[in-house]
Length: 242
Ligand SMILES: Nc1ncnc2c1ncn2[C@@H]1O[C@H](COP(=O)(O)OP(=O)(O)OP(=O)(O)O)[C@@H](O)[C@H]1O
Ligand SMILES: [Mg+2]
Image (cartoon, rainbow, N blue to C red; front, side, top):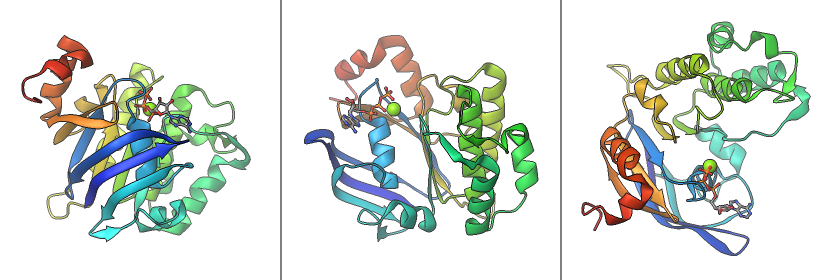
């Protein structure tokens, strides 16, 4: 469903991604790991078409090249991103934003989705305006739930979130990504440092991004365990990668 080939990204003349290739089949959830500054957020933003960056290589969605398209066209075609740090939009209430997303993408069950992420009391406030870390993440994931994108990109859903709210966010993502038996609708790429989200999702594959390159891929739980034990430094010495 999502196929990235030899993606290189330059920001302000500096090469951040140095030829990333990956493929996420319909119905699969892949996990992206990597130390701070390795280029994880840059990769998700490049897929979404966000920010001023120069990209080469290809990004195929259902076989069609999307890398030249605007951010809104990519969203219309089914790419959705929950950001690591989202900007505040004080002039736009969360309620209005959700209605706009719902109208555009024809999502149903809005009220129940709002309650499932415990966001009802935030509806009248400006998007992210003085939201706490946990409120911001719940609101981001709620927007994804309403958009119901084909390609679900989530940047650190657990960062700054307490344990009870991790359950709320984990269950919401599980609901969005749970492959139904008859119809596997979505592909997902999720960035995590803590790995908590792995308790809620059936992650099919994991990647380690280091200095702008994917240096390892495989079973996400095995990779996560190895990193916990040996750190990302250990990745460089791991014989599986060499
Ligand atoms: N707009 C920009 N201008 C200058 N440098 C940038 C810009 N965007 C990203 N970078 C740099 O690119 C590198 C990768 O950043 P990125 O945000 O992708 O890292 P990350 O892997 O998501 O890290 P973290 O785990 O801390 O979120 C960093 O060194 C960052 O400073
Ligand atoms: Mg990041």
